[in-house]
Image (cartoon, rainbow, N blue to C red; front, side):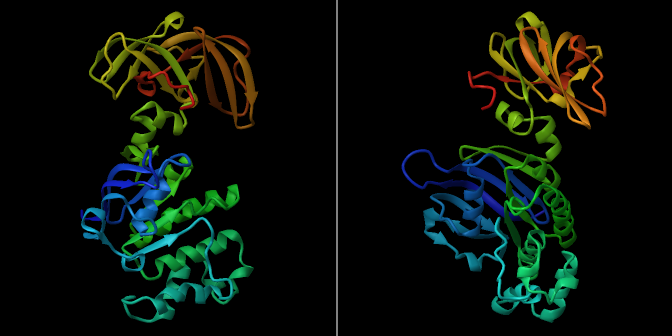
Length: 367
């Protein structure tokens, strides 16, 4: 499958010091949605803006549809309007003095090579796609925030660009609307066969929308993989933590066989864990695991221990427990409508496939 977007060794510096984007490489095959995920300042938006031509890279190469659009070493820089891209921003960025129909028709009337055909039919077809056909003649300012963002999406889709760039387009919406539009957005992009590069700091958005997720930190791309792999096989402790692993147990490597490591947790005993890193006996290690993967009140064939419930927080559809375990503390999440475990001793199992061992570099648990 051909790549609609290819990024090779992308570097962007704004001033002396660490680059905002530091040697990033990835491709986006035609029809795929790739999500760049990470905290503020990690370089994800700067990467997207370099693809759009809104920022000028310091080094590397960007190709869209097989055509190089940026290569500083050759002094090559194609303007944003010549890159055949669409873009949806955080702000709705609609023309306030126009109707919905006029907003969506605007790029067809003002772009070269819009594909010909009837502008009206293209506009109505795209409004149908985003669920706004019945609103075509309304002033755009009379719409809700979610509807205005749909107008912005329709305007970016109507001329069928090679690549659609989305910069946290749902972040200004309220929580319920954000969830609904998130699900709709993937359906719309897949229905059109659009290739997308999507930027967010929200892990749930990334998992729902992305065919692949790239996790970034301090300008570097740490891992690019399908959502299931990012969630179940994080490449390092930062990826694990940023995607929801709230527990870290500190210990020392006893042995490693293949992708399995045995970790001595001291007073807690030994734990078996999966590891992507070349750990050696004697290395300090941190074992990451998610609160929802710990099984309370059960003893399994491996990684079975006894802990002590010290606090319970009933939250309606789930209960969160704080459990002391060999001098360390675990957060455990159980779904259900009632808290099943009382304070005191409790059996717990930490399934080996959901325990991930990484080299401990001395960083804090929130790194």
